[in-house]
Image (cartoon, rainbow, N blue to C red; front, side, top):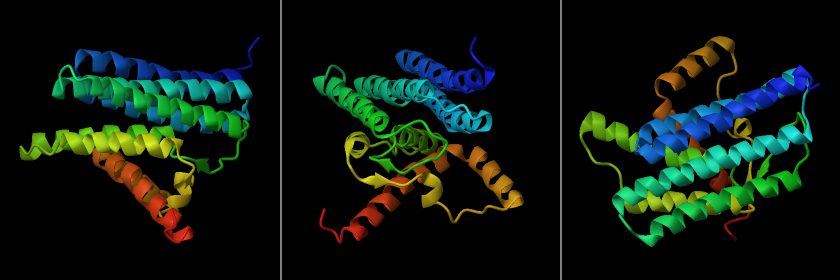
Length: 236
C-alpha cells in the first residue's frame, strides 16, 4: 500500500501534468491565452509539490523522475505546441514552424535529462546548470500575455514575430547551456521577508501576474547573464 506521505506530493505533481494537458487542448483549439494560463497553473503546482514533499519528508527517486516527466510535458511539449500553432497562424505552411517548435521541445527534454543525471532526490535546493525549463516557458508565455494585454488595453500591436522567434531560440540555448543559474530566491533575495510585506507582495503579483511573470522571467535571465560575464571577465 502506498503511504499517504508519498502519495500526496505525487498527486500535486500530477496536477502539473493535467494543467499541461489542458494547455495542449486549448492550443489545438487556437485559444492561446487560455493555453498560457494553464501553463501558469502548471507552474503553480510545480512550485508547491516540493514544499508538500518537504512537509511530509517524502523525497524519493520516483518523485524526482515523475516531476521531470511532468515538467517535460507541461513546460516542454505544451509550450512547443503553443509555439507551433501560434506560428502556424502567422507563417502558414512554413517548415520553419515545425523546426523551431521541435528545437524548443528537444532542448527542454535534454535539460531535464541532464538534471536527473546530475542530481539526487533531496530536500535541499541546489543551483542549476542551464536555465530551468519553467523559466523558459515563462519567457515565451509572458511575452505573448504582455503583447495581448497591450493590444487589448492600448490598441497597439506590440507582438513582433522576429523578436518572438529570438526569445524561443535564446530560451532553448540557455536550457542546454552550462551557464549556472542560481535558485531564484538567491537572485531576488532582497525582496521583503516580513509577513505583512510578503502578503502585500503576493497580492500585487496575483493582480498583475501577466506583467510580473514577464519581469521575473526575463529579469532572472538578465541578472544571471550579467553575473556570469562579470565572473568570467567577459571571456565567454
